[in-house]
Length: 117
Length: 170
Image (cartoon, rainbow over all chains, first blue to last red; front, side, top):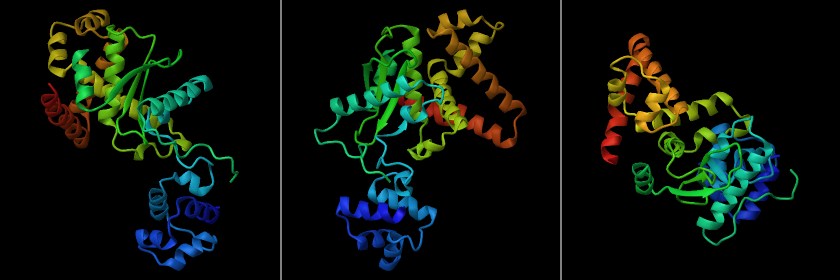
């Protein structure tokens, strides 16, 4: 799964494999092996990969198709489990509203993708 | 209220309103795409009520007690305890902000006032006053009977970081 994601991310971002290797201080072939799922990075490295591509580790692991959550912290992520789905929707709408009102005009990245993992 | 708003402005926090439905009074949002954090107050809150004061203080508490985003990265493995811990930190901050320890000590000097009296005195809700008393009791307990670490931590919280912060803000 990680391999597939990495390929996707390299393609989408236009970033070079060597750039990631340099960033992580690993060799180019190591990255290649991750891409073919022959080897796997350790957890700290995984974290750095997610920073490098600005995506969530969940996305890297194939647990979600959402590249990155819009809301990094606080409210939406501290939704108590007992809140209703309606409230959850309201929060998502509020986030979109905030982005429209206070964001720059550029389109928002990290929206739901249709591709299945 | 004005102090809270000034503080938010000073920290470049956007305060706005949004219809948040029945369950939420406010939310604190830090959206990666946006530089400034946003606090949305529910539209149905009236601007100058004690409730709004408490809610706003609590949301500001999130700003001042949230360290980076690291805490939230694991939201898929949603940890209720962690959520509670985060909430509690925010409420503690808000409690100290709206009802400073010295003033609470004074209020408690002649026996414990009722929640209603406390709420009136500090212009907060009774629920908030109750939470504040709980925080106070926990801190007192930690200071008297806690482990060395707890004692140091509580002392530092009460004496150090919080008051210096307040000094800057007022």
